Amino acid sequence: MEKLIITAAICGAEVLKEHNPAVPYTVEECVREAKSAYNAGASIIHLHVRYDDGTPTQDKERFRVIMEAIRKECPDIIIQPSTGGAVGMSNDERLQPTELMPEMATLDCGTLNFGGDDIFENTENTIKYFGQRMIERGIKPELEVFDKSMIEMALRLQKKGFISLPMHFDFVMGVNGGIGGELRDFVFMRGSIPQDATYTVAGIGRYEFPLAMAAIIDGGHVRVGFEDNVYLSKGVLAKSNGELVEKVVRMAREMGRQIASPAEAREILSLKPLN
Image (cartoon, rainbow, N blue to C red; front, side):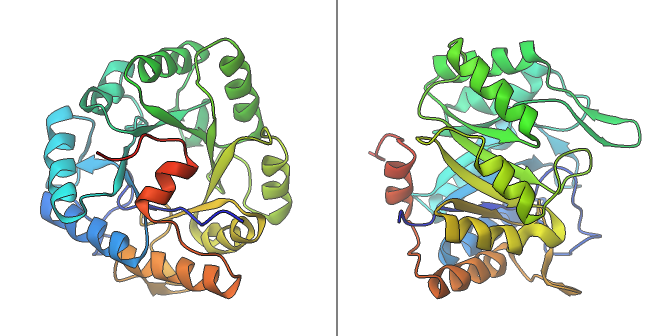
């Protein structure tokens, strides 16, 4: 069985210090949280950025500063910027971090009702536009899928040349408006991707660790972090992203899975070796 790739989604665009005081906003806080996750065993940092007051932004220069600061402390880490941004941002605004030529970036494969009047809009033309930009810039997309229909969209657009092979999916499960986070939902999503594709599971809230265990047993990969869940266990706030990663490492060892280093993650995901 392949070694386990652990991704740490250290801050997200929605979670706040009011939810957990350790949620990072500043450059220094982002470095602290990335380093805690890296030291615990994460090989990928899934990155949103904020201004110091917590306001989410896709500003290229803010991404540049934080990515460079993280790399000083974690020189071989894979940094995967989000192109999701926040509700209401334009396509080009969301794509700004891809101008920094990261190894990977996220590509959301469908529209989602986030609750109330909030709609996370990703039209077919938006997905094509993002996919083409990533092909042009040599960036591997992590295909964010919140439901089965988004897998079908990704497969169809791959055949049309907008998404390159091999495909790597991220099943984001338990989000309002998307698929649930039960084991039956995981089995449904897992059985819907090509045999030669890789995948990561990101369970939201209480689904984080049960779905992590399912992926560990199945041979898939795992995402944890404050973007998805701020609790180490019921009612117990995690002190850092590193604590969440440590829990997954313990689970993996119980199941006999070894943890992938950043170099091993690059090989599994068909990324270029770090020079």
